[in-house]
Length: 558
Image 1 (cartoon, helix red, strand yellow):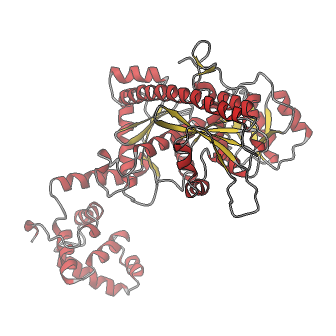
Image 2 (image 1 turned 120 degrees about the vertical axis):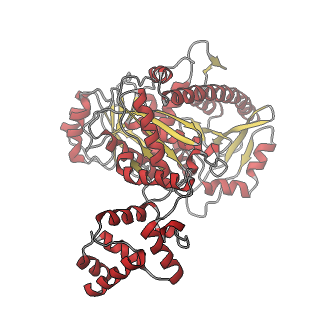
């Protein structure tokens, strides 16, 4: 597939602009192209890549001049600021001299919505081919071009959606539509409240049964906001339902325009089929490359070269939606619990998010896990910056299925990359067990917990459990309903300091001394023996008492 040039900034603004995004100063350079989207982070000393459209998240009016100084020398093309903002003339001149277009984002639009919207438009506009590789005069996959053509044919703003009501493309002139359409485009899918309303009135069934366009009356949303009628036509390939084309209208279309919309749906179907075939092939190739890169040896080196990641410091991140006990369940995830489609959507969103701050990242799904090979822009504390990026991603999708992300160690070779993968997998598995409520962690931050988890697995596989004094104390508590283990934990946590332990237990030191004496008698160990204390402390962490409430001691411990 031949790649088309990246979209022009002016064209991008024409598509997503209007009330959502507008120029704060002079119009953008007609020749300026947007190569990527980047998020400005005041705490990160890195710089956006050339051709970046920079999102000034948290940038105030007094910060703009300094931000322009940082990004202007690296040929960023635009800076987006949250409205309202009142910039002095000298700052506007500074931006103009640096060739940076200042844009204002509507207060009603979230940053994550803008990111998704821009990436949708950019990816769609660069997926197409050029020259002879066209369908019906449009480059393969140029759904935005098709949407604008359909809009011109029927004189109404349109969206093209897949079978799950996700917006694939939309035309210009959306300001002529209603609030439902604006919400749909911002979220890239029809809000549930509206899909439910259509389901209740039988609209979905009518659309799928009809061979032609269907006219739908406005939806009553229960408030004073006006809504407009729709004309909808199903997009089909034979008997297969691929999606829909929606047009916001004010009255039914003429028979001629209805026929034009139906004819357009057939061309859209060809493009969707072509895109699906190309995407499936591209995804399989990318998954194979990521899988090969995560293996040591010649194949790994070749794969990294093809991914454009060779000879660079890399880190592997592993993500899973699998939640379960601290076990090896992650190696054999239950994909029935988390559908493949949902996992793919999550992987696509994660890939998009990483692309903002970590250009060149390679993401793929393997064995039910989402893997990301991330090139580090700087080696010093770069994994901390990646940790923040992952946490931000999870915050943006807080309402979705819980996700757990483990980050491996930095690697400088394919062999070290394999170690980073193991680190990331182990950390993700540990987080999914709910050790402390964290959802993102670097492997170096949970090294002790990880080692204990691995030892716990080995012990379980060999049928091992508590032994010695610890086993005797567990048995005593289980059979006599006592709290010797609780006393032991308090004492060890206080580093054997009786005064601190007594205060933590809210008892007199003499009372705690008596309890300790009984502890030694029941467990048959020497309280002054450092090795005995270490063994007890180690087993407390390896075999938490909550996991062995009724477990009898081994026969050789009496």
